[in-house]
Amino acid sequence: MTQIKEASTYNANREIVLQECPVTYVMQKIGGHWKPIILYHLLSGSKRYSEIRKAMPHITEKMLIQHLKQLEADKLLIREAQPVVPPVVTYTLTDAGRELEDVINAMAAWAYRDKKRQQITEG
Image 1 (tube, rainbow, N blue to C red):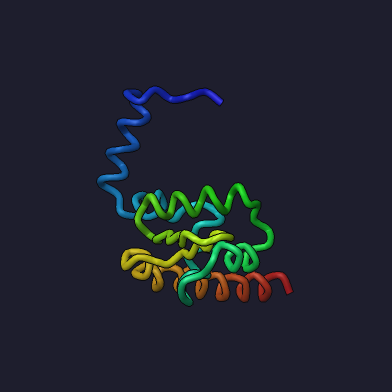
Image 2 (tube, one colour):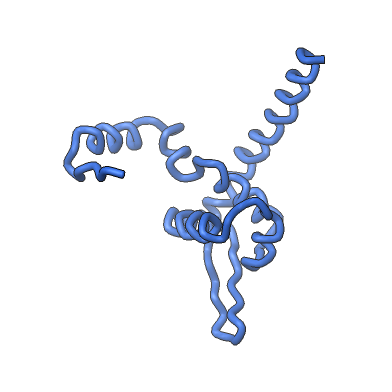
């Protein structure tokens, strides 16, 4: 895959959109297939890595680790590693992450309504 130059017009326009469009900003933080699902599972409380992995059997380890790191970098969750053997790592939502609860629940509610509409029009 070709890399885009840091000073490219694309990057400049992307930065402008991130600053001016709140929806783009949110999608930058929680967009994609797995991030909202990870956040959803953490809404019920702190989880160890193995608990998240068990709750999301279809995600690869590489993708889960990558998305957990991104969510941590975006300050939506806290990774707490205890210095024991074997290692114990716990993930907890930050205040900013918890503030997304209404957004995540609204997405789920919309999905249920839309699925029902689809069933009615198909059936």
